[in-house]
Image (cartoon, rainbow, N blue to C red; front, side, top):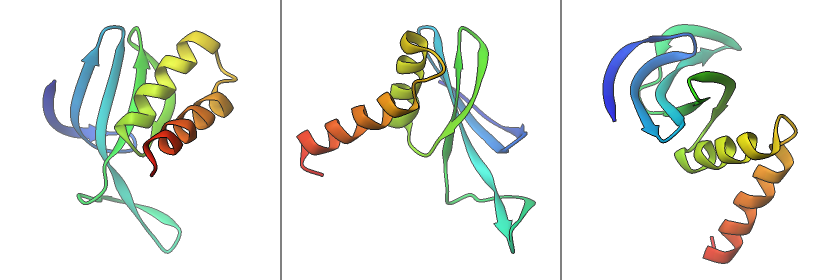
Length: 98
């Protein structure tokens, strides 16, 4: 994991985690005030942006688990992966009793 603190189009990048062909970028999204995005990162919130083989997937998730699942499913299923990803995460939560 590379720790950084640099601007990113959607907020302040805090870390890049590389797992095989996947890269998950952790970042603090910009705050939204009265429906407008500000230039101030929300230090209390972390989102995750994904890349496969260095190519931007143009998707952001609210948890690291969702990001990893989303990237794996997207790589194997393609662009129509969202519904499978949501069912997968729901199944995991049901099995764990959460």
